[in-house]
Each structure stands twice: as structure tokens, then as C-alpha cells.
Amino acid sequence: MSASLPQGFPQPTEVNVIEVKQYPQYRGVTYTHTGDSRMATRVAFDPLYQHISTNQIAMTTPVEARYVVEGEQTEVSFLYSTPDMTPQKIDSQVMVRDTLPMTVVSIGVQGAYTWESYEQNLQKLQHWLAQHPEYEVVSSPRRLLYNSPMTPEDLKRSEVQIAVRLNSN
Image 1 (cartoon, rainbow, N blue to C red):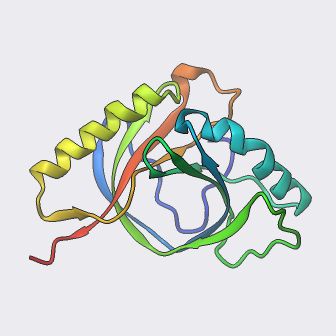
Image 2: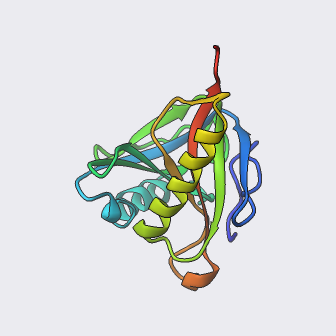
């Protein structure tokens, strides 16, 4: 990783390992992309980068992509280093959003950030969840992308995650 994690974030999940992790509350700047989710991170990069540059905010890792309506709407976020960071200027293309603490089931991934890789690893998580009925899904899946576009494809690290909670039954 070339940049630091936001305050309180756990380390990335090891490659091909599925684990349950806790995330603290965090704040980030979000661009909402409507259309082909495969293009979301590419389309979102410029307005998000412009926001952090204008506000002199250091880049952190990971970039977060939340698939709000699978295949139709994606929220891509650059995360701030601390949850109390407040930008001076906010362009109309982006919004600052706070995310509450969450529990996720996560799988570590190595390789290119392709849609096929995302779908394959999402299926692995869904299979794991089917075998662990003590957890219920509470939101749409997300992907955390840890490396810059300049990182060789085979070395890139990411995670696919689904927010969960313990079943109350």
C-alpha cells in the first residue's frame, strides 16, 4: 500500500481468506455513478481527486466502491484519514458522507480489479454466508481497492465485503 489506512481501519484481509471484521465510523467524499458499475471507479476518479486536491487532503487507501443497486448505481469514495476531517470546499459533483461502524464478512483478493474477479469473490462470500446462518446481510456489497493504477495488475490487492450482523433469531 502506498498510502495509509484511515484511523482505526483493520489491515487488509489476506489473499483467499474469508474473515469477519469490524470497521469504525469513518468519513469520506463520495461520487455516485449511475450506469455500468464496471466503469464507476474510472469515472469517479477525477471529481474525487479534484476534491482532495482542492482541499489539500492526503490520499488514503483503500478506495471504496459500494454497489448500491447492483449493476446500476455505484458510490465510489475516497476516505479521509480521520472521521472529524472537514473540507473547506465541496463541489456539487461529490458529497461528504459519514459511515457508521460496521461488521463485514470479507475476502482478500490479489490481481486485476476486474468485474469478473469481483463477481467470483462475491459468490465465494455468498456461499460462505449460506454456510453461516448466524449472520444476516444488512447492506449491498462493496469492494475496497488498495493500490494505485500504476501498480502491476497481478500485484494489486483488494477485498470484497458484505456488511452483516448476527442473526437475532
